[in-house]
Image 1 (spheres, helix red, strand yellow):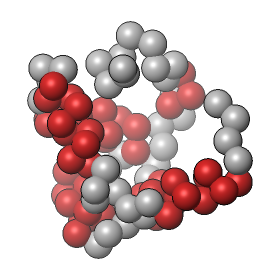
Image 2: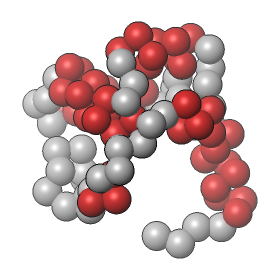
Image 3: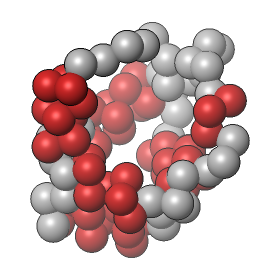
Image 4: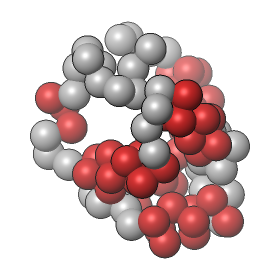
Length: 87
């Protein structure tokens, strides 16, 4: 997906806190659990549940979120196809 600088800046400046409940709602709608969501986020970023709570409480932006993350080196292998978070 090709993005513009404005798009990237808008996403970077969004806070994680209001987006997290949307992730929860989506996975629960698909019959998955919050624990499974945490496993996925942990695999992708290295964050523990406590880290997520801290980031939410501190109104961290996505720029801050990923600056603190240790992104899994295999993250680029995620294609979005046949994943329980897709669609």
